[in-house]
Image (cartoon, rainbow, N blue to C red; front, top):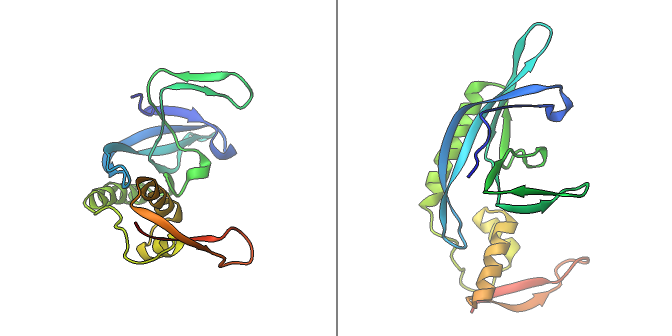
Length: 187
């Protein structure tokens, strides 16, 4: 796998040319709750340095979990293609800040965020996978009860329906607009 560069320059957020320098690297073990596969995931801290008339100035720090681009050929927005010979780590874009990347104004805050991500992954790897509730439930209600993201519980339920462990009992109209809500139960 090709990992993130130790140092690169870019005009991030249209704030002028900045140097991003990797100052810390760690790994966290993550487990896919559906497939139960585990893998190591890299976590990095980058310092953002902006050069101005006076000299180099630290703009801030970013804690990032890189996205993985699988080996293959991908279409580009303006036409053409981009080929990756092997799996490649990609620096997270602005749209995933708060999920896979965090901007910190101080190095202490970046270290704290980094440590929390690594520790959180260790704690989650010890958790049991989502259990099937007894009785009827909806994905929304169960996600709220577990304190998890709707999409994660929806993917879990979809997989269990495909495996025949959960079934759709009926559908109810719970809102004036939108589709009917699926009421689920153990098979």
